[in-house]
Length: 242
Image: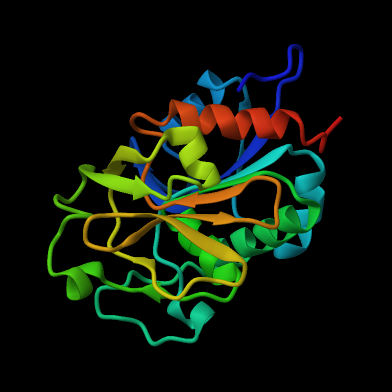
């Protein structure tokens, strides 16, 4: 897929809000690994970093965007899917959860293209009424999905051959992985279209929207150009801004 000549899609990429030390300062900062923006740029778009904000501003933000990229990061608060926290579930980030759910709801309502990465796929699932496995090693018995702290692991993912995602990536992909939670019960309208060898759901698509996919892996760090190219091309045709 190619981006329409002269058309530069603006893609909102959600950020983290963390305390960061720079020189002698410890400051709350809005962050996102540059790999996300680089992947969007290489595919012909521009990443607009979108930090947490009051959910009421979601509509105004989407007015200026052609696509929504939900990034990876911290665990979703289990209260969002009516569960008690597992001992290994990270502390809640209520501002980020509320903001990303509001952005996603607005994007889906407008049929704006959505690419949901890692945590983002989990946000997509929870937004549509699904729930999560809170600590995968308890379920699958291995550390396949997060083999080392601070480093991406690798494994294969098999995609349903007739799925829209397989038409972009082919029936099998080798991916970069780093997560300890995953989809359990699918949200309304979502279809699982990719699995790891241990049965973990690795990809979902929302059939009743023009372009909405979730992937549990990190295409922005390795081998993800085809997916980002398809995403940016879809965003170029969304006509949301300008």
